[in-house]
Amino acid sequence: MRRVVGAGFFLVGVALLVLTLSLSGPARRIPLVVAVPLVALLGLELARELRGTVTPSLPRARELPALLWTATLPLGIALLGVVGGPALFVAALLRFHGREAWPTALLAGAATAVGMALVVGALLHMSLPPGLLLAPLVS
Image (cartoon, rainbow, N blue to C red; front, side, top):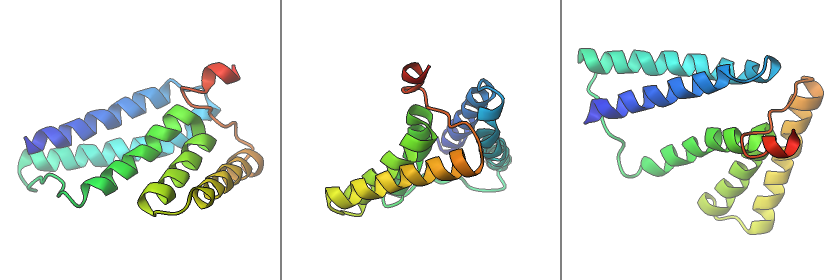
């Protein structure tokens, strides 16, 4: 069962890499920088588990919320884009995990969106991928 978890993570990483390769030229640069090392490291870990040089372990109950929060950021970026995904992630993390008030969480989310747009869009002169849900609205 434990090896199935490692194989599952590896397959999710490969799926993200395949989705990244389907993006247009400039839009795939940053995701490739993340996806290629991710798949390589997941592959190495899976190989170690299959050889038996490391004992795989399932996450402990207290680690599960951190893993789920970590998984929501790339999911948010894939669905809402480079600006919307991190903004929603920051707002939700502060509101639900940090127990901040809604105005504080929303202000931090908006600041994140502005920061991402300025850094990625204006300073790096890169096109901002809109995400799978917003792509039909932008096109």
